[in-house]
Image (cartoon, rainbow, N blue to C red):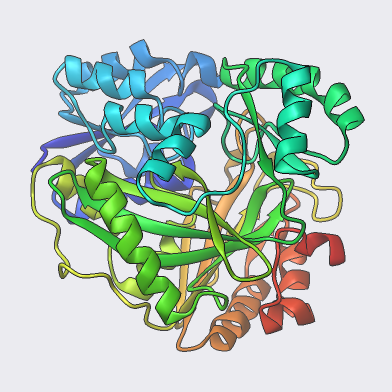
Length: 442
């Protein structure tokens, strides 16, 4: 097992990794920018190293500073969390070159699955159900031609994109001609990759994703699905496991297909395959995230598996510590992402947290990176905490979440808790009638 792990991240995911390491008897090193000096993850880790100013490019995305911090602290492994450099194949490769273990998928895995167009080709070759779409588009004329072949409306996507960014719904050839240049510029600015492609657009899809973890030696475990249909601008707000739309038969069939596909591609560590479900209940592969997901706790609660600990064990060459079978979900879990933002306008709301009281009680888990008296910086994502509830049934988890949100106190700033309460009380949510356009009806 590792002696010391450096966490190349911040906020709640850094705290989550520190906790897993502590339970495994591993020392931890937090890194931080100068505005995160007093952040919770720096206070909980065994050591903390400043790696630069507030701008992420000069700190959390600055690879030389991270490698230097690992060398100075004597860390023998790096956990990237999610976001930042978690899916950067060059970073994972450099870690390997300098003798540091990257706790996550291999650079080769990231290369296979990271680019959306190549991932579609790979998914098709491995037998995964695929949404009709195109390869990389040469220009506007090619985009229009491919969209007509797929059939309008289509989704115009950035091949190197992620997190819902770089996506546009295109309904006509005229819209494509107008949107293509700006979408290409956005892709270059956001991902240093201007490649675009189109997929058939489903008007009211459900977003279903499957959690996997693999040892790179052919042992692939599929830990069921999550429903992530509650989104704003393709950004997830609320997730649950399992999904009311996935039958036991479909779950087992998809697990077998995914297991074969990832074993054939020599996948290692945690990963998530994302699908869209159409009105007929058919799943189509969209993309794969070669990292731990923000919403991993709901899977942990319904399976009893510590995904972060398993990532660490696999990276250290230690066998996974749960049965060699696909786990059927037990009970239900719901996660609400609590963001520092106005609940109506969604405008970010950084500032001083004057009071912080997280919820507790039976069936409530809180993954957070904040505390009372800490100032939320404006330089990063607005996620403050994830509140996760577990129940024997979906309704029990839903009612428990309403109770948990109601007793959450975060003073001094605005949060989106009122929005979550509206979602949970809506008749469509109560009945499970979900789609990615749910918020439009709220």
